[in-house]
Length: 245
Image (cartoon, rainbow, N blue to C red; front, side):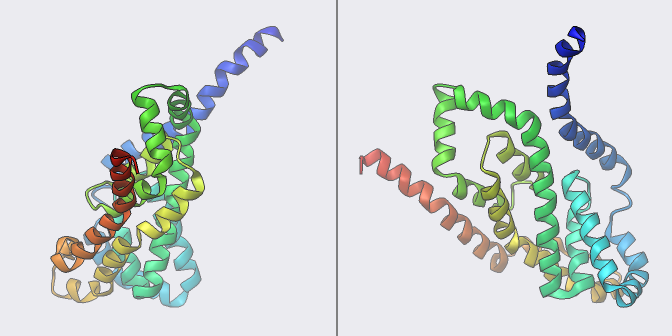
């Protein structure tokens, strides 16, 4: 009995790290085993079957699509862009965007909770007790949490999995993470869903969708404008701090 009580505290940290460890293992396996399958070629080869299934079983198709997309995001598997474009291809712009945003947000919530349960709790505790640089980082995040979360979502150069893991590691509020994720990914989701809406014509021409559309001036311009708006509160606070206002 005494030995069991001694071992119990040691097991709890391992259990806390288990969800994130599982995600890392599945992500590593998926990177090697799925990258040749979750592609636009696969979608092209199966598009007629997918459309037929959607027309006969719309609710079931939505459930399958959302489940697969959530798993892709939660386990950082390859194919998120393909899934987003598929949402537009199968469901059109309004519904496709809605399903893409809901699926990506649910997947992000899952990986956030897994990371916060393990490494995130440890790092957040260290930041809470830390002094010097750690203390300044902690206070800066606390004051600008929403703005930083929006920037992570809006800046196209930030990988989606990084924007999911980093907030969990530094102890941001879960509710702020959820609603900034849901709103912050809408611009990108609209672009990828829009590409998917015209996917049938692209396939008929024997081409692949052009995902570089995201970087066209008329697309990236408004997104960068949203980034500037998200960063504005941080800039104003920094200026006021320097001037002692």
